[in-house]
Image 1: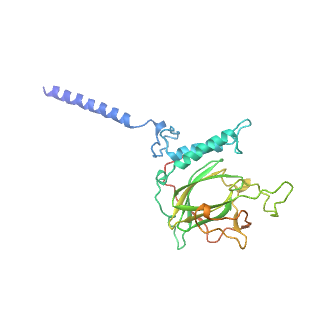
Image 2: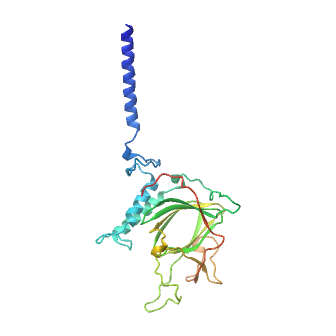
Image 3: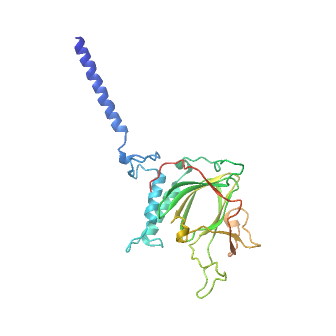
Length: 275
């Protein structure tokens, strides 16, 4: 009888182990599905399925598709082809859904660095490929990213928290046969809204998600240049866009990077991204 009792106990123990295995199998996802729900797992180096991937992972994938180099007969070119426009709209839709909590961010300014002087802006690198880069800029209250350009590049920006004032400038297109009246400064052909200045306004810190395509690369003519308004010109004080009253044309002068502006670096705390 004793041995039978032990046999029953052993059988029950085996049943419990089998049930535990079944429960573990139900709750442990397949490696191909890991990284969902904002967890950002790598899944053994494999790409997670779309319905399980974090939102920022889906943004990175769509950016890769949108800005991939076009083939000889592809409509997905970066100059307004139909496939490119469709992909860009999808990327903008996804970008509009991103919130600070999706990247595990809470409203704050740049992280402190050793030394008495702190950076007005910090950058969190998320990912970069040959076709695009993505990261987060964090600005302390009142900080300004000075007027700068993005030669031959597309740029998308999504405010995560705080209030930003963005002043955008387009080069004036000279009439056929004209010189634009600007000497040698107008030789670089730039895209619309290619020069901008970003100010954190409203009394608090701010942060935005930034996508540049392709990334800055001085060796390929994509270096960052800074500008200032010529003497006697200034931006209107912060206010509603319809009340800023910006003049139709302004003169910009290229200038060295301002001595009081630099960008620190800090770790990105959000879900892992594999573009």
